[in-house]
Image 1 (cartoon, helix red, strand yellow):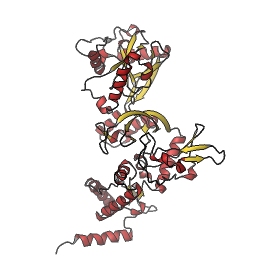
Image 2 (cartoon, helix red, strand yellow; image 1 turned 135 degrees about the horizontal axis):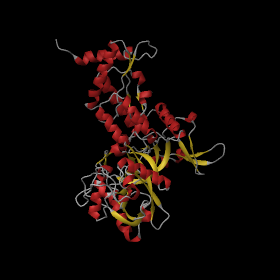
Image 3 (cartoon, one colour; image 1 turned 60 degrees about the vertical axis):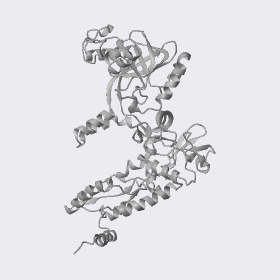
Image 4 (tube, one colour; image 1 turned 30 degrees about the vertical axis):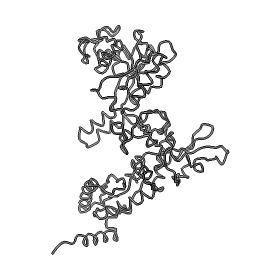
Length: 502
């Protein structure tokens, strides 16, 4: 007798749905177990093979725990905001909301046909106003605590898509969606102050039952470094800039400085003679990803600005260059170059015939940089000291002479949270005509995404919401003051970052 899987599976799937077989009883006194999948993004293509691969594993675990007597919470939902749905809508003329609803219906049918034991009464959709009301509420709590703020930062800007992209959305200098060129560009953005939790993130890694290799990867990503922040004055001007270094003991060996091409001082300090070369180099660098720029194997490139910094420990003039290997997103966006004791600085100095001065014993600067340890030489008050002694002495001198201070720096950057797109959660902030900014009152949440037929980005840094004047323009009923709603929207990750709490 053959097994009629169509008939049998339909029968039991209908039974499970009608009888709510997998519904979670939160009042149960059984021991509880929570199995959470990564909710799928409902694309137009439907499920791919990777979805049931992961969901099968969590379903096996959930069913086993039920048989062991646990009260199991196993929810499902949809991470449905974001760029792909909007771009598809633009390409095809569809409404992203209707397109997303249709896709969710397809995903729901496919997942139910696979027979997974989800509690469908707890279905979550990140594009549902009843859900993103709380995404907006969380944002407001961050804003009130000073953890959400506006800043001008260098971002991945895609002119074709008209929006900022995260590093994860950029592959080899092109957008993951569509393969469009991406450039680095300074823009005002909403940013989340994730760096405020850098030490806690590091400390809590010790509590995780993860493989050591994964925890080490996280530590490197956070990138905690101890050292000093040193202030360099720019010769002939009132300007100065700060540099973070883990080796303040090598200051006497700093023979030039390098700024990121995006550093705000570059335009101010560039001489007339170097202006054309600097501008051309900045344009060239804008098309490179951070990964390309920091590739150790690539040929070193850079341009002299025509300006000089003053080394605070010896008063010597140091030429200031710009180069792509210095990133605005790390440290202060400027470095002091010590070519005798840093391989990257050594290659740069050799390429551009810049001075190399050994300040640690054992260096053969004609052949290579000496990155090992040794007694300090050619370093004034640091001569004869070992590394630890010299670092302490250098920081003490910097602080006593108001040229710098001890500092901890992180590779981790604050999270750029703005997107210049339509299909995302509106940011519940109002900008008033007097330059102040206030949050939308909590009782008025959700701030609902308005309907519009025109979702194409303006390409100017504003989202399509800026064109919906009846939504954007507001008046304070008490004072009559006029204002505008924030037109940037939240990234796709906003709603999916917290659904485990829902």
